[in-house]
Image (cartoon, rainbow, N blue to C red; front, side, top):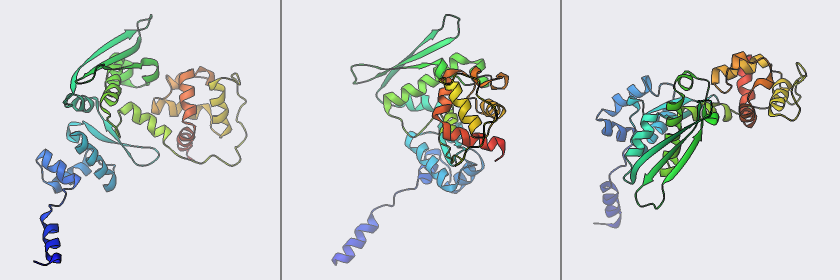
Length: 274
């Protein structure tokens, strides 16, 4: 056999690497064509073919089943898709780790009886010390129905996700609350070359985050009403519809919005209809 013939024979003997879709189809025991059709019509309906295949690859990497709502597509306001893993998915990934040796939660309440913090301690085989992660209610809470009606459960779920990520290095995936922030912070827009005149003069202290936020929002040609609508729709401002001045926005929320200034202005432009 000639050298060329041997090379062709060896090349043909190497099996082709299965596609991400075929890997998932095999794992779920369905036909690839039917799987593609179903994914496009259901859990990944808003994703492009390229985004859908990327989501399939993520699902394969972590052994998640999108039809059980363990992973789904979250459209970003800046364009594209963010892979979201539900708390069931995070728990599934955690308990599947061979080194996982248990998890404990400690919930601490504030003096007024509201949740203050939740600490998760994850024990990992072969490590001398456990991984301990604390999440704080004031930093995690959003003005949504689950957070308003089940604050402790939501805080525990958030802590589970963050602790699992830190203990086992899960990357490229997010929980739903993180995705809501990403839709604000990842949106890119251009600031006007010449900002329009202020609609009203700032009413808060010039050194406060609320005053800085007011200056940026009004200076870009938007109003408090626009910010209220954005805050209510995104959950980024607590009781957004009841505030009557920028000074009534909490300091933590004002700082978070300032960090996401570019995305905030883009979101306000969409609300205003620009």
